[in-house]
Length: 158
Image (cartoon, rainbow, N blue to C red):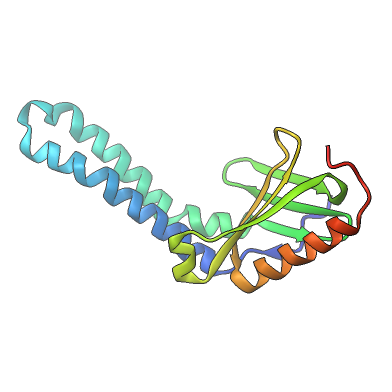
């Protein structure tokens, strides 16, 4: 199988790094404060804090670049394709005739970086494809094109 040909935008790496850094602050700060002020909790908070700090360090330095390297997407007149994964790769294909909705999402960090996510949904319980980390203009153009192709494609979307 040939992988989809489009990469997500390079700012995807910055976005995922910022997400992990924010998570690190939210998780590690309260645990660090608890370790600092509650002597009785130090024996069990210290190891937990270290494991979480290591996890966030890996999540900040390795994961975003690796995900950027792996994630691919493509939207044709026949289907929407997405390839993603961290330890295992997930290949998803949604035929145009099965698409029920096409949404564009822009979270606060994505907005700051000029990125967006396209969500393509079908009636299937596993039928949602999310393509995160696209440039806003690319996401909007792709979503509009998919809406036009979907409207012109016969099918029952079930």
